[in-house]
Image 1 (spheres, chains in turn green, blue):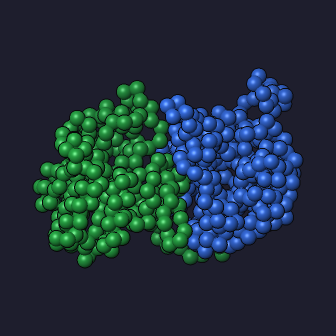
Image 2: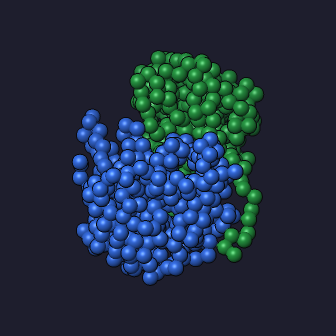
Image 3: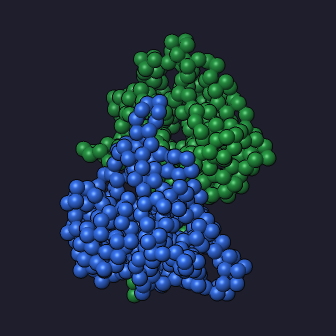
Length: 277
Length: 314
């Protein structure tokens, strides 16, 4: 008999749900925060670094077709809230901009592999710029929950668009801001800052997202000092689940370059295996 | 109690809804219980390892999408060791989609994949044939017939031929596939298309051109399913832009015995179970005992064969 052995069908771990919009407000001149009311069973599946695939509505004259992947900015089972941070750049985010209380948004998730915090990683350093900080924000909450120390190096064009710094401070993180306007966001300065942290109480792991030059810098520092790290990456997606193989990127696996799916094997990857783009 | 079961040759499916190759994998089990589907259809595999095409591999066009994935494949070994055992936990029939660069390579893979746990083989003859200047086997009747004869000799499992809309000879290709030994026709694959970013003046796909899928493709696929049902005696499985139970009904009425749902799953991953439930409600509401009673019920009595098989604009 072909199909003799049976196992019990798996319990779904990914939800496709219509979630009510609580609010959708600007956080500064560039970014919007979307807050959705979400059931606890969905929020309890979420991990820092994971993402949702959003079915951006056809409103305001926008007609996005495919879903848009967006990393989780915050998830709060006790408040039944799921947060996203976005910048209006294309058809999908322009459609999101039109959402308000009373509307709902169809989401698929949580999806992908989140950040790892190994048991012996005590001193964590995250380095990110712009909207990349949205992806790293839930990591700060997780670090606090696990009682790890966290230094957040936040980079932006100018102090006015620096994001999440209060959020990181409230979670007990040591926040260091660098900006183009102040001439402090250069790679050399960030390298100096991190070398200082390593020479001080030490660094056990790096986390980053969104910037090619930060990836190169952290890869070099990681190699120099034997410090592991993780990076959250983006790629254009269709299904978000791993079926279509649209969102591949190349990664170093020993001597070989291997295509991995950002949606399924990622979006968080080993920093040393990631390829600058 | 209404009956959703359909027969594709000797293979009985509990309902006519199955995924289209390339839009389905084990990963969808994270979202719903895959046992509810009429069949499971795997992403096309090749014998050896294939990396696939450069990115971007997908872009959207109004109301639809283009893709050029390039059939990345881990090869036959991985498939037999890992993929087939995953699907053996289900009672749902497993249909394996395969492709080859040459007719002989295709036939070798067809034979290698004819193992326990596989219920039918979907042969993706819409892929380029390197012996025919890269033209897909299913563009011409002669190359369709030749490759189907070799595939037929390679397996005793049911063979489903997946046709391409990039042909001007749909009825001839359908008959050639049948004469070559196909047990069913899957109608159809994606339509060759292109999109350019006017700002950068670069094609939106890394591979320059790719296949159109989604609702824009549906009328074309429906026309082909209708032509194939008229031209051939073997069952037709409709595929192309199907997103709702109404779309399914349209294909059944046109002559398809079952359908495949593809791109719609990317938009709503739970669309297939939703369509199955809607289809059942429709049959109850309309007092139709079996979904099979709908197949080929299109009212076209007065139309001449010359119109039915037309391949150019009227």
